[in-house]
Length: 457
Image (cartoon, rainbow, N blue to C red; front, side, top):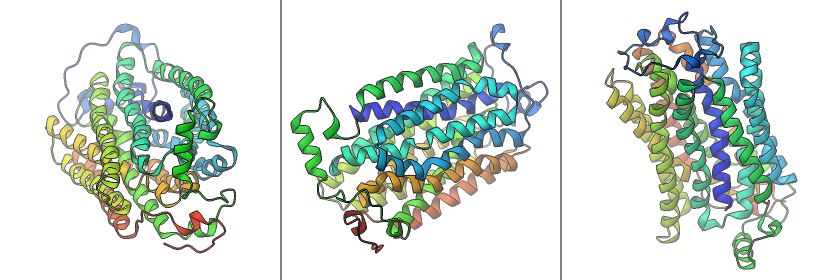
C-alpha cells in the first residue's frame, strides 16, 4: 500500500516538474520568434491538425533562448536548498508530514504559475524556485520512510515500485500537456495537474504513516516481520548523526559522483527534449508531448524490471549486494551514453532518432536498482540524510545543464546538439567508472554504531 501511494506521489511531483517543458513550447510568441515555428526547424515539419480557434486565449511571451534556459532550470535552484535539510528533518520530525506538506507547497505554486508568467519572467522564475523548495524534501523524506518500512531483501522491489511513479508522471505529463495545450491552452496544464496533486495530498494525509509501529491498521504479523528484519541494520542511536563519518565516507562519495553524472543526462533530456523535438525534428505541440514521453515509458519499464531482477539475484542466487548495485549502475549509465551520442548522428531520420533516445533513457532505468538504492544498503538509519546529500549534488545538473545546453544551441543546429549529447555522455561514463571502483554494498560500521566517528569503508 505504501509503495503504491508513494508511486502516486512521485507521479505528482514529476508531473508538476516536467509539464513546463511542454507548456514552454506553447507559451512563446512564435510569430516573433521564428526559431520556435515549425518553418524554422532544422528538419522538415510534420503535418498536424489545425488547432481549434478557442485555444488562443492564453498570453504569449517573447522570451529569448537564454531566458528560456533560466526558466527551465530555475526549479532546481530551490530544489537544491532543501535536500540536506529534508533528510535531517525527516529523521527528527518523521517523514510523513514533511513529504506531504512539501508536495502540497509545490502544488500551490504550480496553480499560481499562469499568474506569475503574466507578471513577467522573473516572477515565473521565483515561483519555480519555490516549487523546487517544496519538492526538495520529497525524496529524502521517502527514503527515511522506506528505512522504517522496507525489509532488506525487498528494497529493490519496493523502491522501484515507488520510483516508477516519477517515470509514469513524466510519461503521462508530457503527452497530456501537449493535448491540453492543443485543445485548451497552456494555463490548463498547471490547473489540471495541480488538482491531481491536491487529490494525492488528501490520500497521503489519511493513509500514510511514519512506521509500522504507528500504523493503526497493519496486521501484527506484518509489523513483526518488518521490524524484525530491520533490527540488525538500524542504529539504536539514530538521533545522533555521525556527520564526520558520513562526509568522509568513500562509498557515499561514489554514490554522489554516480548520481551527479546520471542526472546530467537525465535532466538535460527531461527539460530540453520537447524543445529538441520542436526546433530540430519539427514536431508540433500535439505530437511533441507524446513522442517526448516515449523514452520515459521505456525507462519506467526497465526500472520496474530491474527491481525485480536485482532482488531475485540477491535472494535466490546469493549475489553480493555490491556486485548487483555495480552491474545495474554500469549498464544503466554507459548504455545511455552510447545511444545518446548515436542519436545526435541520425540527422533527420526521425524514427532512428526516437529509437536511440528511447533506448538511451530505457537503459537508464536500470540504475534505479544500482547506485540509486545504495543509500539504504550502506546506512539505512540515515538513508534520508544520505539521499539528501547525494541529491543535493545531483541537482546541480538540473540547474546548469539546461542553461549550458541552451547557450550551446543558440542556432539549433544538429552539430550544436551533438556537442550537448557528447558532454552528457562523457560525464555519464566517468560516473559509472568511479562508482564501479569505490561503491560498496554492506552497512557501514558508523551506520550501525552511531557513536563511532571513524569513516570506515
